[in-house]
Image (tube, rainbow, N blue to C red; front, side, top):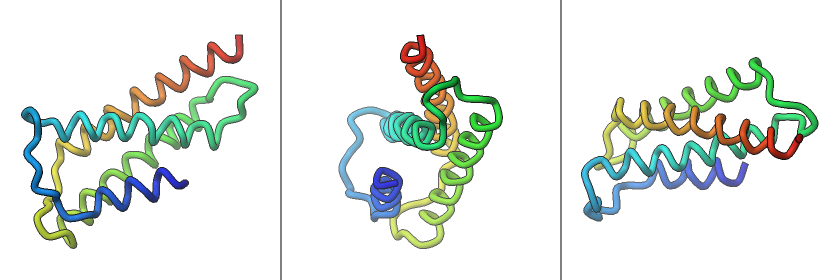
Length: 112
């Protein structure tokens, strides 16, 4: 929960004005943030004694997608200097899928 609050705060801050080290560096940041976001939420809602099921997988992916869209909409509506970006949402979904795969791999190793 704390991680979700922290990234929400960061996503809704005005831009820092710092120059990105390479083109689309922010997309990589979105992917990494959402990998951890999904892994942490999967740990919260999943029973550690059995592999994550399809229903919970879909729930986590939908929640991450909705969260990412809401953040982008809020940036466009209320944050000066920020605008919504469809590529950010795509990066968020990409990170979410990678996060679920990582969680699944980690969980399979632990359960063996």
